[in-house]
Length: 446
Image (tube, rainbow, N blue to C red; front, top):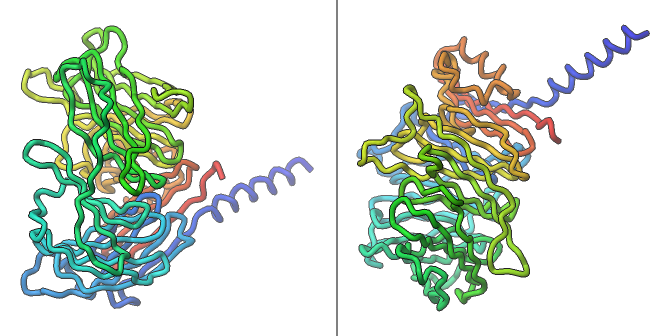
């Protein structure tokens, strides 16, 4: 009887594993199209871009107008949509909970399209930056606000921030408008020697969030605080908050900057910095939440970790010239990911980094030297990982699947995803079969 029960239980576990995996195949032969790019929309999903050309035509001068076909998927593959547009330049995408914003840039001209998540077009506009005294080189960052406005951040030669707004759904096209945010009269950094400029953090829950840094010295201060401001949709100052000194006795900031981010799922503020403690380089991560009875944010948890800085991995250089880059913070639901990167050209570039993750309570769930983050995987490197730089993958369901592609030629990963509920997704480009294969795994926490 016990043997029968054990066999039934084993079959049940096996079937659950099999049913937990889903597979979606986009075949170029059947579609008559070839995949050339993938756009990650974060929590809102991803878009695959196809056209009729076998080879990548990006930057080809003799093709001035290429029809691009877009296939949208939510991260759980429950929502799908297709749409198409003619493109003349470099394509970038942004998203909020309502729409996908596509910018087809030709030099300083933005050809803008706005689509919803069932593939309907809601706006089509053309924006010439030069009409507003701007160029692409001056645009620091672009985002799609929750109120469906296009936001562009520009820093002038003095290093001061200017935020430009474009109402994508307005029938009266007023063009690009510089937002006028009244600077707070309060100054908690009055006695601090170094005062940073205002930086735009994000648009969240109907508010525009800005932050400014204050410290007792420009380099390696022992005191570092942040002044946060909230503006409503009429750009009136709504609330001011303060992150008090993040450094404790015996600690100094290593470098010039820290990183600040808001985790919208937890509704908390994350500050990450490289510090020196007892002359040893360390990673500091703090999580702050709002206190309804005080303008000073409450520290929920604080973690420090030694930076791996041996002969093999030099994350900091003691040469008197090199300035350490601030950590990179990524929020994935209730999970917080922090990377200290050795070298990089851009944030998206795969690089050696000390990769540290935390859950909502601040429990450290991972801390090792890794190649790339959870959204990055070099399949060639993964297949011959003698350095064990992909150990974060070994405990995941996708590990066995990825290993199977090591036996195939012409395969590459376009994206991988690991959610805060342990759900997983892998997008494989099989160049031999001319297929895009999307695998998803149901999370063990669901």
